[in-house]
Amino acid sequence: MRSTDTASPSHFTITNEEILVKKLLQTHAPDGRDFNPEALLYAAELLMSQAMTPSDAKSDSCKLKLESINKEESVTIHKISHEMLYNCSIDGDGPHSTTMDIFESLERYSWGAKMVLVIAAFALSYGEFSLIIKYYPSNLLASSIAFLKRLSPNLLEEIKESKHRVKASRALAKEMVEVTKCILDCERYPVQYVSMDYNAMLEVKNRIRITAYWVIRTAVRCAAQLTDLMVNSMHKLLRKQLKVFHPLIDEPLMVVLDTEGRVISMNAIDMVMVWGASAYPFSTVNEEQLWRGESWTLKLLMGGIDPVVTQWVEEGRNICLYGSINIEWIREFTGVVRDITTKAGVQLELLYVGSNSREHTGHILATITREKLSSYLSYTNMIFFWSRLESIKNSKLRLYNGVETDAIIEDVTSLLTDDFNKENWILISEGSSMDMLRLHGRDAIGRFTSFQVWGDGIEKVGILNAIRGAYDTPVIVEHYSGSKIVAYVDYKSKEEIVCERCKRLMQKCVLYQCYQKGE
Image (cartoon, rainbow, N blue to C red; front, top):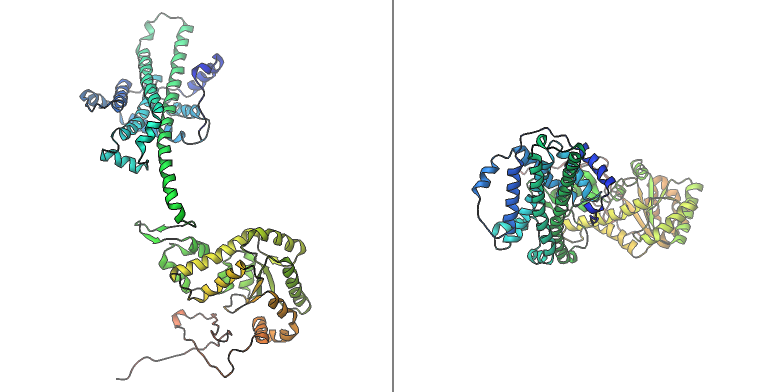
């Protein structure tokens, strides 16, 4: 909220006025330019008087006088008008700061000309405001302007509630015009023919400077009152619309438009969370193409959140992500794994990824750090990790219209469900391999505790298949042979495909097949 302008001429002491005059003179360097302030003041006065009364009479004399106003003054008026409106809506030193800025921008004009230009700038804003409230809502033009400015449909009622402010602004506008006319008369008076001592002449000049300051400052305050009325109307309309739409918006959206203004994505937040800038231009079509090249891997899960983990993945290390809010389980699990990695020389990187339950994560993270139980994501990166999982799920579900028929959807949903149910879980993978093993609670600890059962098979089949082969009940009793044909254009030399039945890596072969039919 803007600070109240309590300063007035009566509050200024002689010393304060002397300081003010010195500051005003620092902004004053008139160049005697050809400018007719009387014509412009007449136009501004006519504009405000027409806005104050219901008269629609036209003035040919005004038209003739306006022809003498230069383009430069017209541009200056618009700049001042915008400066008054802008500075009314920001924090700072208040009206005094804005007033001094205006004096600096008008340094080439006489004191009277400065006042006229500012009054004309105020008249622009006042005239537009008055035309809207005068003809709204019966006039199409006034209604259109009100609509473009996002003013409330109840604008007239709101103005009536603040009629004392409008009335005060009108009275001040009239007084500003009358005072400015007096200053212009003083400046036109041939000083060389006046028999007045130096001190008296200096006092008159200082009175003109002080008067110019207060007229311009008053115009700034009047503009602030008009801005308040307009902004309050916009604010009431927005609050009303927010009450209507807020219940419909559970989460923030990021709607994306193309260069033609067409919607290309109703919500690109998930795309940004999963792929970042590489998803540009964030269209639904591009989202579908990006998913075609993705598989359920640690690379997809982590997404470069932590550079150290990214390096582990690129180096093909055995990585074990784990999540839990049970510090006792964490101590037991990390202790068992530490024994295996140190005594048996098994390479396995442990990484704590926390939980969506943030009220517990901070305490757990502090304990892991203090006791050096394992590597871990920072608190901020944990938030990114779980938000990323949510975005992966949301993005896939949106593309599939909410039908969970995708392996990635099933896997990421399982992780989120485990976390929601406060399950203790681990996820093991070798680098960016598509083959991953997820275990829970006591089962995870039990398998690592009985390392002697499967440890010998690590060198031959890797840690995942060693654990899986020693404990998983074979699904296929009889001999089974299956295959999956992948088009050559989609073939990647390092791609690994997991068998959907036995969950083991499939052997890669190249198949040449002729589709030509005999004649």
